[in-house]
Image 1 (cartoon, rainbow, N blue to C red):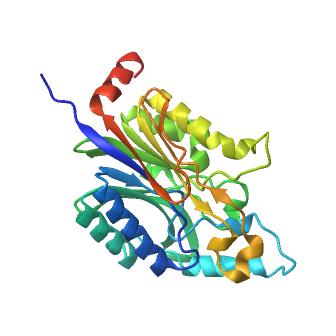
Image 2 (cartoon, rainbow, N blue to C red):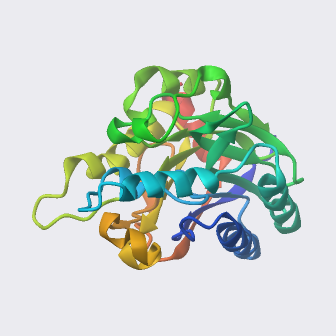
Length: 289
């Protein structure tokens, strides 16, 4: 009789150091180390965690040049894959002995004025497994991110299971999810910028969908989902960009292969942990594969 694999899933919920790639890298490596100490097998960060979600595309200012200045600053803090930034992340993953999936702002070496919303996959051996560029940035995100392609729609075979990932509203698109499900994904990272709180009783439906769509993916794929939500407020951004800042509270969850929440929402800066097993995945897939 075969032995079912078990693993520990971690959603890392924290604010990066906006517009500071080096400081964000230092914080990311520290969080990876902490997740490793907590026994995580795989740790996931939110959408473009490194070095932050482009909140300024949604903001407004009396200074009409301010968003453009923020965009230039943002591009200056993007990173290439591979490169010095990813080398640091790979060393951190290897030292912690965990797989890492992190959202990052990726600069294209051939076109330095274009950056992508990218999910980077790193193995616990410190090697890059692959990357996925967001296919269609949402609404105003198109003013800062380029459009990706389907070459990164890949499921990676790991010792404990098959892993995959998508960014934010890619979970509202049918075909990207279908491609990953058809490859038999078992553990999926749903990277989001984080939920934006609204006055009660009705939350903004756009942001409430991050949990609904992530749970739907888990159920449809019969896979665990790590919903990694980003977070920031005006306190987390440089003073000269505060008026452009929103407020994203994270709302990270971990969801089982039947679409049920087993951990979360995470509160504040924290590492959300849940245990999973191959047995639960196969039990769900036996019903609907």
